[in-house]
Image (cartoon, helix red, strand yellow):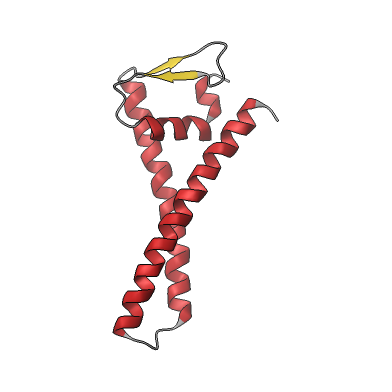
Length: 113
């Protein structure tokens, strides 16, 4: 497996884990609240909420990563690293390092690979 594929898989795994965790927490809270109001609430309602939450959480984290990357690129906080395991370096003052890293993992072509 080449570096582009491994970086992309790592990024996708992070997005999936964040979306699933967010989904589980919000679905649990929604299910509890819905059953408190109406104990006979349909399971289909909770399932649809869960599906929508997963999609929105996945989109949200990717959109945040895209905005963080654009900000870092605009302010010159991303440097290219030659002969390194990770082909970029982020300036210490970069406010959202993990989001910029996530975006570069999801889009390894932007890192010059």
